[in-house]
Image (cartoon, rainbow, N blue to C red):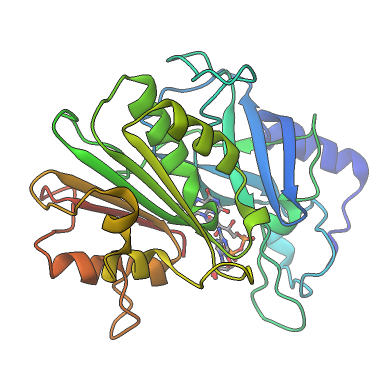
Length: 301
Ligand SMILES: Cc1cc2nc3c(=O)[nH]c(=O)nc-3n(C[C@H](O)[C@H](O)[C@H](O)COP(=O)(O)OP(=O)(O)OC[C@H]3O[C@@H](n4cnc5c(N)ncnc54)[C@H](O)[C@@H]3O)c2cc1C
């Protein structure tokens, strides 16, 4: 359903609710975009790995291909929000790592979710987000929050990151934090997507891996004909991770970060088995705000 508000009312609602500007949109492919946003009040401080919310009014138009939406009259003038991890460009246009405080925008890495046909609850925010262009306005935050970040002290640890799709976003921020902070221990960034075209940050990370001997990257594409169909959890379970990197999962000094699809992360009882189950059987424990552990995770749904 299209919201039928007069244009001047829409302008007033945008004025009332929106507090940030789209400064850049990078279309990795039609359904996968990087958004760079600047809040009117400047960037709030945050810990790499955390998330904030992006909001747009129900009155904004959607891209085509989504099931029809049924809006209650009370929703017409409301804002809808979703959580998004703050990603990071990692390197500047000259290829050098950003220094602390140098990046003057928030970067987000977002997949367009569309459900065609008939569904009572079609995706709502991303069909609107993917109608935006450079210069458009939206609502951001204001709070940046979340426990999914590195915990001090870092020295003596090794950090292994596993993500699916846009779950790479918080890892870009944490890898940037480690490398730009001069961390010398082992870091592995493993990213799994369907196709290689979905690996937006691959060139950046492969170049960094050549420049930093302690940084290794693994990219998996499960639907490319010339690659074996391997998921992150297969690498861990079958010992391929150790073979590829030379690093071992030692529960005494390894922190594992898992982000994206819940099937990769685990705890989808009774199955499929995810990385949590595989590592718990090797002495790893889940980190919670109340108890220190070495498995950290953020599920996107
Ligand atoms: C803490 C947190 C951080 C998040 N960070 C990101 C991020 O950095 N980038 C991002 O793209 N999404 C992220 N998400 C998901 C995001 O909040 C939205 O759910 C998503 O963008 C879809 O919104 P929607 O309103 O269009 O559809 P919704 O109605 O919210 O979701 C519809 C369905 O889409 C699927 N879905 C949700 N997210 C994704 C995804 N990323 N890729 C593929 N399918 C998905 C799920 O099956 C979900 O049930 C995050 C979620 C959480 C909880």
